[in-house]
Amino acid sequence: VPARNISAYLAERILGLTMQEIGNQLGGRDQTNIAMYCRTVARRADEDETFKRLLCDLEGAVRSRDRWS
Image (cartoon, rainbow, N blue to C red; front, side):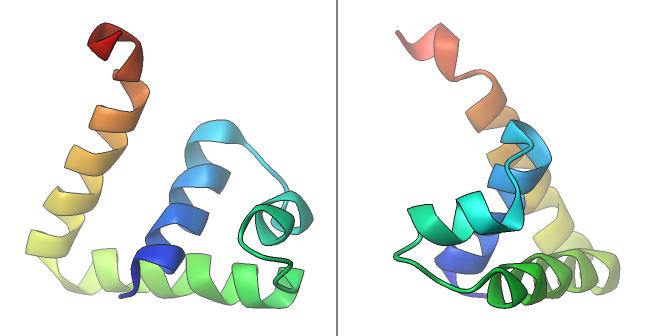
């Protein structure tokens, strides 16, 4: 799964951005592409426990970014 897909997934999940907002931030990509990215990441997490743990670790790191300041 490309990093762009993961970043779109996390932007939706953590920041609550719309597909259009995420698409604009990722170089003007169409909202249908962003929705596909998010579905791809969610599907992979459902199928692959190692990927799911990695995704949870990334989400935790992003959510705790204030501790890094």
